[in-house]
Length: 222
Length: 270
Image 1: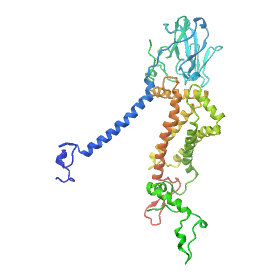
Image 2: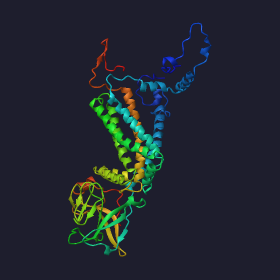
Image 3: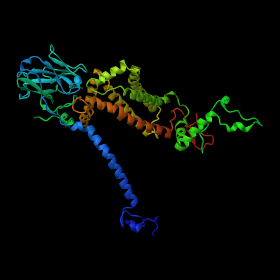
Image 4: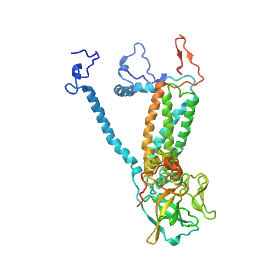
């Protein structure tokens, strides 16, 4: 029996005269049991922590449905002023899930962005692009005005003054069965190029589109 | 067996010492107060709590402590007020975004006995707690009490401050009126302004891209379970460090050299 207190060169527990996990093993029984006990504890903790965490952050990754809702007939909308329409952003929670959108017919004389199947009607979100308060359309001034911090947008929804960082968000629109339908929201930069929907307060000109990346839950275009 | 010390009774209540030659029979009949001491002793022998309690409460404090030193305890009582009133508000509150939440708050305010009072205690107590926590922080800062060896106490206190502000933010939505709703929309969008991580954090807070069906219940769970649990644990650590390290003397108290000149004694019993 070698002296237990003297440092020994051999890494084999048999040579050192202490019990090994197995005959001739390098790992001692005590260390093996420690590893097993701590490992079992880690597995048990992870078994309830990881699913719970995934459960909590799942909405970030859940892709939303692309839905259309009818808001009226083509005769309801003119080129010169906005019609106010209430749409449902989140179903099932009553008024808290509703939002207002301002809709007019596209006017090629002022709407310089390229026309496609989704913008025969211009539908602006009422959400201010500073911090998300609801803007209202003042027809006498032909401006959108935000009550919270004084954001002002012109007739096309471009920033005319105040703190907003980008033009008003828009909704996809289309004509289906003789009804004007409204689709998901999208964001635009100062040249009215389309981007996936961003939160208010996030500029998407230049470096902004990389600082505030597209979200995983953006609805996929059909 | 160590006995806890007898309570400091005034003279008139203490048992009269026996006169010489008096009958000893009285000694075999314990006083009624002894029954309580015996019961406490029985528990304490098994749980050994009294030494911890003595360690926590009967400790030396430096000379010169003054009223600003009570601001930490005041903040603690504000937290306890929020915890107690919050638990009982939860008995009547319904985190239902489809009109149930607002109606339940109206029920608390209009119908429930003392409902408006308990709701008011919670609402105004929140502001009181924020004010007290800043005053406490100012006291610690201007007295230099955050310096060695109390840096970790300070860091835990700063985390508690942040968690308290998060409590204020998450609790603001729960009445679910117009002010709550739009304040939360604005707050979440401010949060989204942080580059890279901000939008994802806001998405997590809302439980989706927009204010949705689970946003309210999410805020409710964060407000009444997640953050309070964290805060209770951190307050425990904060109090442990205060007791372990002792209270810092006011900066104008000079170290007092002991009579024997052996070493400087900063602390003196009050």
